[in-house]
Length: 361
Ligand SMILES: Nc1ncnc2c1ncn2[C@@H]1O[C@H](COP(=O)(O)OP(=O)(O)OP(=O)(O)O)[C@@H](O)[C@H]1O
Ligand SMILES: [Mg+2]
Image (tube, rainbow, N blue to C red; front, side, top):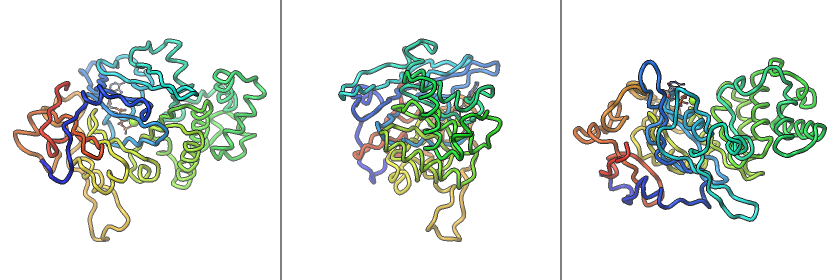
């Protein structure tokens, strides 16, 4: 066990007992989402536990297929058959204007219920990985954004149009007053992405889930959009869950970071700790695989050996152990590590820090 970090014997179950509705807007506890397919059961989420802090940006990173988008869809209660949340909970801590909080267990709500539909779009909005999945090709951009204003803020068509142009302008859309009357196919990829972000922001959600919103864009447009999102986040005090492959984007955007691996959280920590003092061997391996300013020019980037196993496989022990440089035989390949909390409030699942075993696995 490492002696470099102070470790508290606390874990997922203790966190469940001590929810902190003031500081977290959403809490995920032991979430399991499976897809029951002809090929077998894909265990996309295998016990995801983490907190989305209020009025901050939480970055979610991890290699392709580790469950970032499925977590987002599970929070929104948008998992479609053959997928299903089989275990665990998503708790929304709603805060009223007078500061009082009420708790809503989103996993108890029917996906199609009025209450869930109100929460989606009103309190929690999502920008999808692929813009054309959310933009309707047969309606103008203005119609689509106006609809949200009319539905959620009860304004008339004329006022909704005015607000639509305003929000398009705020996300840096060129010629917002022309674009408002155009159809999605008439826009460039970057413009569509801005339209999506405008739609996501139109109802000033308490939580915006952004799933790789800038991956398809050139770096200049990406930098502008990140800037706009950061600005709006602090202006309206919303929380953002920002999913990305790109650790550079994480460094720029996030206050806190969750590192996911094969349907579980490897580590959750403030952004500086992730970059300067990563605990989990997977986080360290991810960092070694990207270029960093200030590193010696002769130092080679080191890709992580092996690949992420597919979610149909049933790996015994820590899911990262076959690729881990710090693998301990008869320990890491036997049990799934539980969550260890460090003295400074970081969460890590690794036997280097405690011998705590996951019981709910
Ligand atoms: N409809 C589905 N049917 C079967 N398996 C699915 C389905 N949707 C997702 N999965 C599986 O769940 C796992 C997690 O997928 P997810 O889309 O969350 O990955 P991700 O981390 O968002 O990856 P990326 O970075 O490529 O977007 C993957 O292995 C994927 O194949
Ligand atoms: Mg994804």
